Length: 292
Image 1 (cartoon, rainbow, N blue to C red):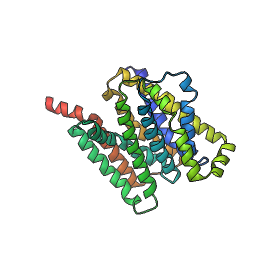
Image 2: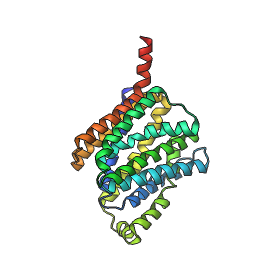
Image 3: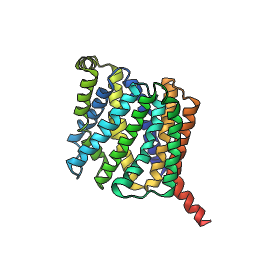
């Protein structure tokens, strides 16, 4: 991979990692589900007028938009608003890799390799380490919501696989038409019309910045670059860069938000990243061992 493409991949991981910090800042002034609704509204518009609709059914687009936008980001934004640290969320969300493997095995008959099973078990142990002190305190709800968000991301990945070989930028943009109204409806029900209207009528620079960052660099630019790289290089070359997303999330949370991770959370996060590394690099290690 040329150095310029390596640089682009690194930019994407930093953008995605810092998005957790932006979410934390955004939900401080805006109801979380309303913020998620605005994120997808501006990710879809005006892009849908310039990007052709991908050659797939509306059923697939609606399914992807629901599980990615309404379920995944609705749960994630709400969890962070309820107290889930941005740094910890950036780590726990990577469990989506193993949920995807599990759901692919159930729905599509894809048999995971031994290294994927081992990596999944290691990551599950990391989740247990993080969950243990939280399940006995007030952090249980936000933590479980974040795990559920990771599971919803896994379902969205399976839906995207069902779409086949389509332009992923167009797929994401057009699927972004689905979440805004359901998320707005849930916000009206849970937060109340008065709070929603107050937030919309008193939009500040922080809210504008958060929505702009989440809609454009995070969704439009990052997904476009990621799809570009995946279309030109093997997935095994590109996907390891995703291991840097939690690193960017943790560093950004520490520098910008002043967050610190408890020792058990740091250990659990490291174990999850280890599980991800086994999942990504395990097959290469096994091949080299067989060649020796």
